[in-house]
Structures are given as structure tokens and as C-alpha cells.
Image (cartoon, rainbow, N blue to C red; front, side):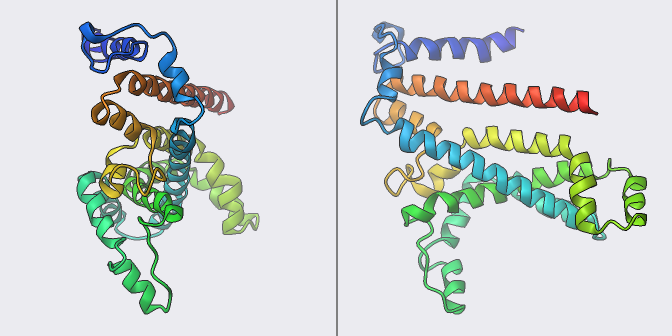
Length: 276
């Protein structure tokens, strides 16, 4: 309880105090009560927080969740039919234990205009793509890397979930003439719903809090603000501009969104428990 109070409750309370103050530094002597001014400034005309920052954050979180969950499901289904599953799962899990800065720099090199990916496209007769330089492709390019780096966790969880699917149900469906696609849609995915739900919600929450990978690959959310997300915007406001008030207010907005989704997760888990 003491650990929870020191490392969770006190930081939240202090962040709340900063969000309601107009001090430019996080010192108690510099704080002046400002009411809801910091929250109002986040959503005022001309503010970039709602668009594109918060919009980018939600797109990034939803996009990486879909890519990771679908990719993890496809990989888990394929691995279930291959020999040496332990080896394949280890290989898939390697990106998870790789330093995120190293991962970001490696993919940044791959995405360069004269990098290997564009060389491959040119070899295939296609034009080069400014993956991180073009505003239209910058955010999706980082989303792909985030999903790739998270795929190993999803594969492990979904592979474990597949082992709980009763074999007799699958065999009975095959005897009744059901094809592989019908078995997947009507039996496997419904029985895999708890694992899919856990993967999707944890990936969504991780996407909402993403910071390091975007910082490494895009250098402050560029080009422009096309890859700027809430966590990065908070860092810039606090440590670059010294505006701790609006940075803390933005943190509370993100906390509210995260708590809402976490409560939705608990509600869905409760419903899942009642259904099963």
C-alpha cells in the first residue's frame, strides 16, 4: 500500500496540481492556481492538441491494435501447423526483447529514400516511397514498426489460447463437412475470444502511451505534426517549452481516455465470463 501511495497516488495528485496551475516549472513555489485554463487551452481554437495530436494518437493506437491482433492471429494459426513451434515462437518473440531504440533506428535505415526497401521497390519497377518523409505515409510506416515489435507477445498469447480450443469440437465440425474457413469463423475465433480481447485491449493501451519509437523514427513527430502523439506532445510542452501546466492537463486527458478503455475492458471481460 505504501509503494502504491508513493509511486502512483502521489504522482497523480502532483500532476493534478500542475494541471491546475500556471507555473512554468514543477516547483511548488512557482505554481499559481489557474483553474481549468490549461484544459481550456488544449481545446481552444488554434490548438493542435485535438487535431492532429489526439487524432493521431487514436489512429495510431487503433491501427497498431488491428495490425498486431490480426497479424498475431494469422501467425499463431500458421505456427500451430508447423513442427518446431518453440523455435518459431522464440523467433517471433525476439523483437519484443530487442531495445526499442535499436529497433527504431534499424527500421529508420530501412525506410530511407536510398534504403533497402526503396531499392527493392525500384528493382520491382516501382517508384521510391518517402516512408518517413511523406506526411501521408509517415504515421502508417511507424504503425507497422510498432506492430512488428509487438507481434511476438500477441503470437504467444494467441498460441496459448489455441491450445485451449477443444479438439473434439474441431473434429466434429470436420465430420459434419465444415471447411477450414467455416471452422475458423464459427468455432476457433469465438472460442479464442478471451485471448483476442486481452491482446487487443493491451495493444490499444500501449498504443495510446507510445512515445519512444515515434521519437526515434520521426524526430519530434515530423514531418510537421503528422506523427505527433499525445505522449510526445506532453514531453515537448514540459521539457522543451517548460509549459508544465498544459502538459499535465494533456496527461490527465490521456489518463481519462485510458481509464475509459480499461473500464470497457473489464466490462467486456465480465460479459465474457457470464457468457462462458
